[in-house]
Length: 252
Image 1 (cartoon, rainbow, N blue to C red):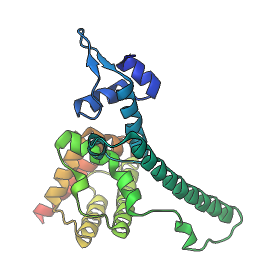
Image 2: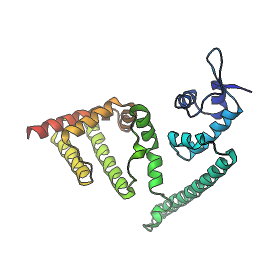
Image 3: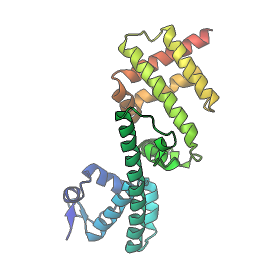
Image 4: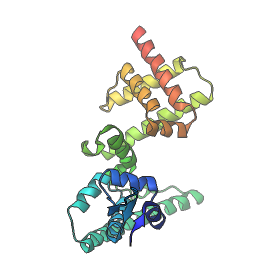
């Protein structure tokens, strides 16, 4: 029996757009194309889609999934491996849930929690890669930039940088809500502190380069939505504040 894209989408709960994307990148090719140009999928394609979705649940990037499946492995062996990986993830999630429940219990009881117990269940580099997966795939598909080829993740360093980014963006968003002008000295100081932090942690940016980065955020849908989701107008405010800072730094 053959299924149309719409029928496969309804069966699998995968969007039609996603199925079209999988076809475009060669991850899931329809079994047939009708004379009218409709994509048609058979049992073989449905089985492959199931394997793709299992790997997606494990946060594998699409390119890696294609490499694994194109090696023509035995389906049973693939499923056994996926089962083991999912069980390992389940075990980690259960540990994270226990940590969360213990933290809630301590908060409700007005008690402190042991510092080591606070971080039980967090699996370091793997969780960072999962958190960065959507951005990595966007950069690969849109710009051909493979973030996965970067060096191994330094978890402590990434955590510290994430905290700094959160602090910086929260203060920029607060300044926007408070009506602070983009040329205000308060913002110059805030951006300067952020750039000094980046320099001290191996990511030096000149004021001009930082302004260019913020212009990129404005033009790129993924990063624009990420900033606008935090505060409406934040992407534009950040860009003009960065431009003002760069002009100020050049004048000095």
